[in-house]
Length: 80
Image (cartoon, rainbow, N blue to C red):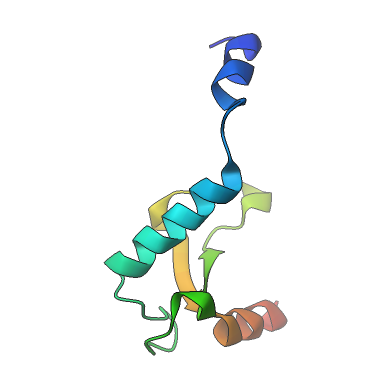
């Protein structure tokens, strides 16, 4: 696919809406549970975390995403 065709494809793409829809779907599929502490949380208290960081080639695909609560996400990022 050429660059100009890619631009046409992505011109109407809204990453924020797509990301929200993905988080909502994973919330339903994973029963609203943090994948680290296993506590049930509201969707507002859960965030998507990349297992393999995007900075080293991780992708926005389901198998590379963990649904974790904000407090576990903070702890996970402090360890690094």
